[in-house]
Length: 69
Ligand SMILES: [Ca+2]
Image 1 (tube, helix red, strand yellow):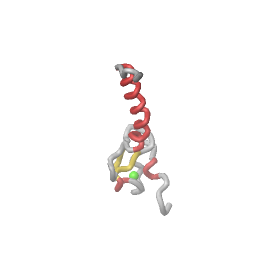
Image 2: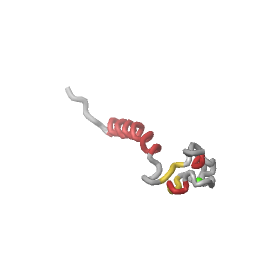
Image 3: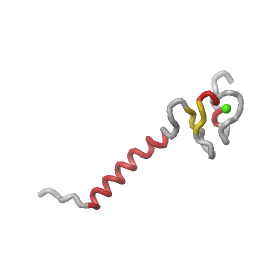
Image 4: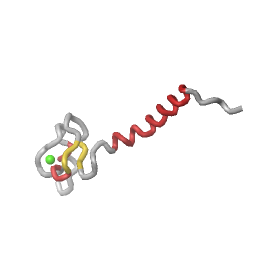
């Protein structure tokens, strides 16, 4: 006997898919070619502004972990 899939089952599946894909989405919150600030209102800056010597992100995370410093 196959259990009938009702709306409750679909809702459960929907929430399951959301919980699986959510971490991936937060990782890719900036388009390619942009740097993701770690915190603050500013979320994405052009990659050219990363490690340019001037803090762009509110938490200055774009000037952290820069090579050659
Ligand atoms: Ca910068």
